[in-house]
Image (cartoon, rainbow, N blue to C red; front, side, top):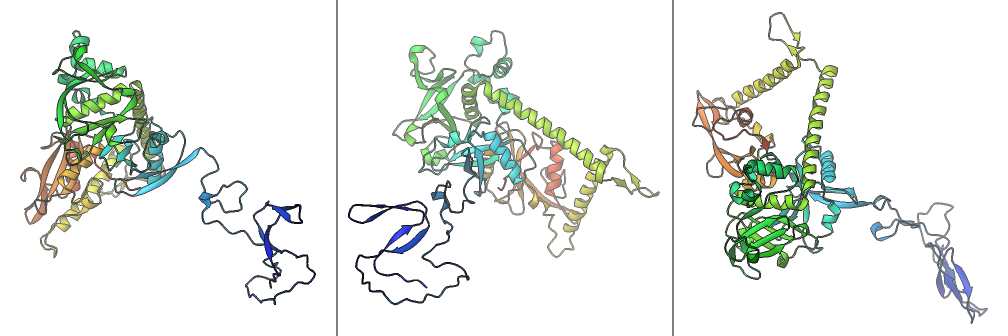
Length: 529
């Protein structure tokens, strides 16, 4: 029961009251617990109201509402300071101020939020996401900085601090980080002549002095630098839709363009940009967004400022090899020896992972698994040789697939003798994606020899297409179903080589080139976070 008489004021428990001249009390707030206290008038005759019975479910022994009010959990804890606050803070970040929450997207547009330290690099964040998503392959992952509105994307270097990169983003934009594969991050260290063609090297005649272009490039890459690059590029003129063909030079001191043809004389060179203060981005869908003359577009922008259209220097090459040469040279001139260190660290980590897998495989086999051979008449025998045990395991798996594919391809089936669908569970199968989308997926994960995926053909029913990267270009091979002896197979060479399913086709071309120019090496996969 609660009785309130006459005028009243709010008094907080733990507060102190000071007397003011005139007889009024001033209340100093201390705690946040609310109580109600009547304000007694000076008049001796006080007219009181009748008490009202308020039913409640309070337990016995609980004081009235006027004495104390229990603390209520705050529904918005992120708006309150956790220090000296009675609200529940279980949803707040860890007490250490060095932890920050970032959101990372997968290629299927799903996202995951992770806590990272203030100085966390892109390599460390990728390692956390690999562990979280339980990826079997722990290398060749990267964080992609994506600007969907402008069609810009670039792969963060392993040593870049993620929070420093995010600090340069505009708050109004839709910029995001994407977790994906990138096999071509350090490919120019492995195949320098593919990335730096001799016709684009401007200093080979001056510096080489009897040295071949291949030797010159390899020596420069080992020292953490890059040869000077030259060539024509289409540049988008400021505030205009027109494109102009200009001869550019990329040197350690910066990017220059020639005001007179391809002249290298100092009086004809115009300074364009400083390499230390810019980032280079690949432009997606450049024909539609910027009216580019070709699809091989890239741009440079100041690294410390938010992305604005007026700050972009958009350039267009005539081929994918030319664009890759320019973007790789930008990276090498900007980061130099740091990229060489990142590459060596990546190689050493990969070697240690391979050794760990071999060691774990041996211990697991010796501890819990025993390989048996039941092919003889004398009963089963234990296979002691590990190589023979692995071979028997592969043969058993292939025999099972062969039996399954044979069962699915028999003409007596009600389904109409269709081949096995085991390929649908493989990471390299991408369903009915278009030819253009397949090329975009391969380009995003790195234009390295042997990158591949298989998709359904959009022009030929019941056929598939093998999309394969070779020499920075994506080639497409039609996989046709054929019938022989009442059974269905797949072929890419007009029936000369038959495969019972797409999985056998992929496994065959991983160890045999066949009609392909290169082995199938890197499957183009999409990870779900």
